[in-house]
Structures are given as structure tokens and as C-alpha cells.
Length: 407
Image (cartoon, rainbow, N blue to C red; front, side):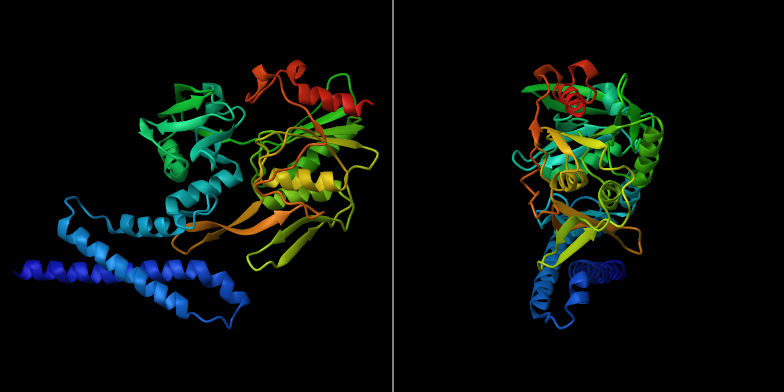
């Protein structure tokens, strides 16, 4: 009897601790930034909401304690409660990361991590997981994964777009050298592809002078940390080689760190120009302006290549250059992700990536769910579409860019 009594006391204490922890953490996450700018706001509604939340958790936990057959992991319950609360926002870009996932996410932002080398996005129309782009030179590209592929299963387990985080964790949950099997839906056909996990290093910027031309070519796969400075170095090298015009390839670039994209725009636009206009939940505007002198003169003509997988930070750069007619946009309409997330890390190592702003181009053109239309629309040949690497001779978008710059 003493043992049973101690067990009941323990469960009661743990229930109270879990309830207080979840309530305090979730409340702090949601209202911290708002209270900084609105110190007089009343919290009556939040108190009512918290009471309801605590009551629901108590009820569910009592049922678990009474009926659940398996072992109860308190840490998993807490993380699951927080994740579920955040997912309830219905925003595909807002995510809660436990400590281990937070470490993986920050490693990816720095451009190196262990995995298969793939960028994914939730297709909101079909509630599916779509491959935005495999990383060039990574194991996913080597295995034959293509942009536009739909991931339906990971190691035999089916996932929807709402479960993209779980699918991503499953794909990455293994050491280098282990394999993961993806079920892919491509052009109505289902195929299975086995991919080996490896240490993946993202190349921020690739640059070269196109053969038999004075045209510089720069490809930016993603806007990871250090991308802007690397872009500047590459441009200076191309200028030293006699570059007179420039192609910036943003195709299949799903975004990254916003500051890296605005820094690149800063290198190309005159000092003092607007680069980005962001609006928060209260409609408050913040304008990012160029602060540097351009690293190339206006006599150097610029073309930006885009496609339907050009998204987020890529659209910031393309939109700013298009608005000021500093670049001609060639290709197809961009993805249309016009919202910005910030990363908040907690003392226990966990964190949240949360949508805080919608952004517009300098001329106040909306991007979110709209995208950026090219100045010159050019489709790739059907047999070359969705390929990560297209033969130069068959790359109609690149060839049109060359033609435009040689006029």
C-alpha cells in the first residue's frame, strides 16, 4: 500500500510539473515579443486559455495513467505537447525543435551536416512533401532524386505534408554510412530510391567565366552563412578575368538566411536604395536599405535565372534587382514564399523557428503565394525539366540569358 501511495503521489507531482512547464513555456514563446512592444496589454484572455489548457492536460494525463499499457517517457510527453501546440498554428514554416533537432538545424544553416543532402517543402495544395532541390554533389543527387519529386514514404512509413518534420527527422536519423529508402511519386509513377547518408557540405557559390565569352556565371544553391562574402570574392575574381556582364543562377534555390540575400543585393544596388520591406503582425514596416557602394558598375549587365523552385530569400534578391531594373529576370515564375522566420533558442538547447514577417519587394509588390514573374519567360525542354544539372547546350534558359547579354 505504501508503494502504491508513493506512486500516486509521484504521478500527481509529475502531472503538476508537466502542466506548469508546458503552460509557462508555450505562453512565454507566444507573448514575449508582443509584450516588449505592448507593455499595457491585458492578459485576461490568456489566463482563461491557460486554465482550459491545464484542464485538458490533466484530463488526458489521468486517462494515460489509468489505461495506457506502455511505458511513459516524461520528456517525450513534454516535447510532444509543445510540438502539437506550435503545429496547431497551421503554419508550415513555424516549427519547434527539441535540442537534438535544433543542433541539426543550426548545422544545416552553417552549410554542413550529416544526411542525404536535400531541401524539402510542404506542397500546401496536395498536403505532400515535395523535393525543392537536392544539394549538388550530395548523396540524394547521386541516387537520382530530382526537384519536384514527391516523398510519400520513408523506410516504408507514409508521411503527409503536415508530417514533414517527422519525415525529415526519419531521413536524417542515422549515422554516416547508413541508408534510407524513399518512396517517390514522379510523373504519376511510384518508385523506390535507396540513399546513403553522408557528411554533406554545401557549396555556397559556384563561379566561372563562360567559355568564349566575357560573361561571368554565378550559381547560388542556397543562402547559408557566409554566402554573401563568398559572392563578393567570386565577383571580384570574375572582374579580374575581364567579366563585362553577369548571370546569377537562382534556379532551385529554396532560400536560407535572409541577411545573406539582402547583403548580396547591397553589393549590386546603389547606396541608399530600399532592398526589402517587411511587415509584422501589427502592420509595422521595417525597411532594409543598401549601405555599400556597388562592387560592379551599372555598365555590367545582369541576368537572373529563376524557376518554380526559386523561393524565399532568392525571391528577395530577384525582386529587388527586378524592381530597380538592375537585372533582367529570365526563366519561369518563382515559388512564392514571401514570409520570414526567426530562430529563437531556449536555455535547454531547444528552439522555435517562427514566422514573424511578410515581405514585399522595394516597389511594394507582394511575393507570398504570388511569386515573381520573369521579364522574359523561357521554359526548359520537357525532357530537361526537374533536372538539377542540365547540359549547357540544352539549357534554353541559360542560352537565352547569354543571347540577351550579347545583344
